[in-house]
Amino acid sequence: MSVNINPIDACSLDDERVLLLDAEGHICEVFLTSREVTLKCEASVGGNRISLSPNREILACAGPEGFALFKSDDGTLLESRRGSWSSVAKWHDSGNRVLFTFGKSICVTDSYGVPIVESENFSSTVTDASWIGDKIAVAAYGGVSVSDEQGSKFIKREFVGSLLCLSASPTGDWIVSGNQDASLQVYKVSDDTRLEMQGFPRKVTIAEFNLDGKWLANNGADEVTVWSFAGKGPKGRSPVILPKHVGGGTAISWSKTDANLIATGDSIGQLRVWDLKLGLEGKPLYPRNHFESMSNSPVKSILWDSHGSSIIAVHHDGIIYRRETS
Image (tube, rainbow, N blue to C red):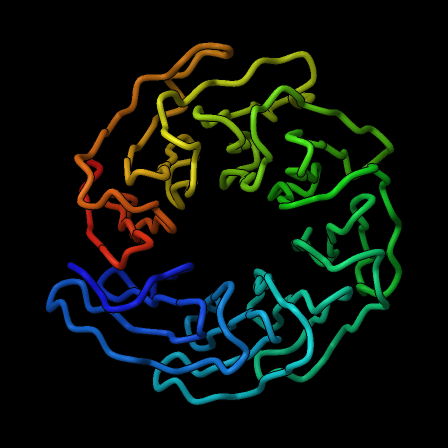
């Protein structure tokens, strides 16, 4: 099916309903079976990212002019803050607070937008941030900063360069940044260890851990590379290679039910699913599912259903479709 917006982000309300966000802040609800599309709400802050609370009751939106919170059932605005660029909206696992970037700072609010933590300014506009349990990792020019459990005091892990994305392992052991200089920087949380993976032909804009923290996937080349973080981590190891994507991975999504399954999409709309338990380090992996594309537009989001048996592909031109994976 096709919708009359150009989505830049998406999230699932349930296995039959998807929320789409465009750059202007329009949030549409799509019913996959009936193909009905309705405007859920409009974020006056514009659109960069949306995120649904774990109980699916509150929708957080980050945009070029700030951030906002809405009730997911009827789109009622709960709170908004304007005045700075916001590119991150990430819920804590507890569901009782959400992390936003806000210009050179980060802000944590409760479900209704009441501030809990407001940091001082970092060295530049914050490009990404992530929860590490109750701690917060922040990416800004010059390195990654990690807070204490109250989110009030930050210790910086230095790296001279521009950080574009950030991912923290679910185990809390590792932080990985993708960077403008086409590298991955890997930080061990417990000590000063920092590893570097170089040689990507393009900047790394996506780096994502799987559900148990034993794999990390990233773009930066026509191949998506997947690194093992099992045992002592990736030092001295080669990645599993997910080959033949055109223009590199534009969407990477790990299954929420099987730690070895990953879906990837690229700039010409190709969509694949891979089983990492069949992969060998340093070797190309054959995809488990290679779907015929319904659109030549870049894949912007890939959403897994709650059973891990199907995925929904969202393309930038508004084409949306579901594919069975098992």
